Length: 304
Image 1 (cartoon, rainbow, N blue to C red):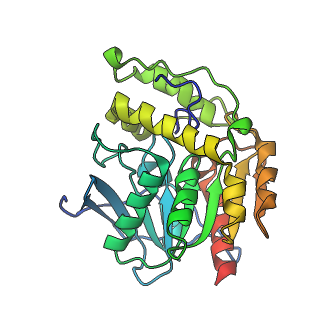
Image 2 (cartoon, rainbow, N blue to C red):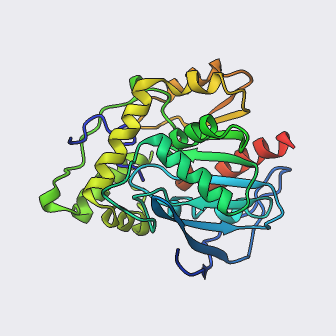
């Protein structure tokens, strides 16, 4: 779940752990997701300017696939996708600084290029030399910045409901953000979180509500402002067109936060594959993880 992603109305090393991720149904077509029954490896990497929590799934000798979450979210937003992808990929998820179980310092930069730099450093620590990078919502903005900073590391990009520019943003009723009354009440978070889904009765996962409450007022609002600034400086399609990276764009046709018609803006990127997903909103990775994983695997498989 993301609180805004563009934020145009926002006010101015640990031990290794293991847990079993959630599962989803399989499929029979050629690029269908396969189940991975292995446990998730969870660890915290101490970088020079912050502790970064990472999770790894799947065979370590399989092609690396990095999943980047959106604003006011965490790597838990990918939980339903992981078992569908880890049968064919070394799946890596990262809590960006200020999110999830990563550090939340008030004296570090949350600018998008700095978030991308930390992601690259984390992959270096893990020994990853090449990866396909998928980002959901503003996670796609960080993925784009990573490709700009480290083109030799990023082999291809997949953006899922990532608004291409600020012009594509649909104004929202803002989540009340008051440092004196932080964190927000659960019902406030849930009310806004429901705008990320096409069905009004979709049950927002409890763990994602908890992740918002774990953030600080500073890290949430600063991250959102910095995402807005990155998009203001230059639209994503323009940035991507000059990189020459294979690109997949998936966009829920019923997205209530970014105009789904704006997905066509990415067609300026040579050979970009752009697909609208009927009946889905801003968060296909939760609304229909199986179909989303199938499309992502088809993209990564065709590249090999």
